[in-house]
Image (cartoon, rainbow, N blue to C red):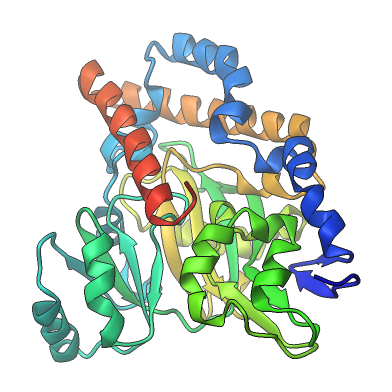
Length: 369
């Protein structure tokens, strides 16, 4: 591979790809945003245990969102959450049970008027793992065979920008508040007219972490030389795990946006703590509640993902995590005072273990392990 590859992914410019690739290991080590969830969160265990002691429950998160299984921390059904959200905020979708045949599914999609492209995602999933995009029926059978359980099929939302809005509300209060805003730049690349798609990906430290998944997705185009200046979105999934770049936009918080999302979230029964991921085209329109759709609603397992902005330090991230844990613990204590009863201890523990195993399986499915 020659020098001076002009390559853009998000806001990252890479030159001298051989040197960049050789530095990838150092960058992964030195930039905390690449670290595993366990590595980031383990030092905060004393803070979590202190909040659990104050809440008199090791699994205090269960009470954060009474309408969700385990508060939305583990093994929660996306379909159940979607069923709580007004349809006007959601794309057209259907639930597909495990074992359905491709022919049967094609018939259902045709009879119910679904239009391609479609998005497939596990009903129980996390971090954008296992999400696939289908342009036509010819790929449906292969995609079905890869999923271990129930899945959700949605029509692809036409809006081009994605944001995560973190929302909290104390039970019994009239209104909630937004505690963080993140803008998500999808994993993308820009050609230079000289190097192949594969070479450009290998030269970019962020994209190289997704190399195996991308090589599988773009196997027939791996040796294709992209024209100079041609930008291309590789994976339109707003997940840090799937290569998206997160930018902290909490400074864009305003009363119009907060009132809009307070109105939306108050329509979701038993929802007090979590992050709404939305697709939109115009920020002012989103603030007014116009021309947007909800991609997902995440409960107690929601991260304040604005912390993953590369400009933030690990100390900043730790402060944001603990700040949100404190809010979640307070919400949970109030809900218990209002009569919420925890699931059995062993059920909660089993859910966390199953969720860990599920994540491992979905990471393999997504080509990340």
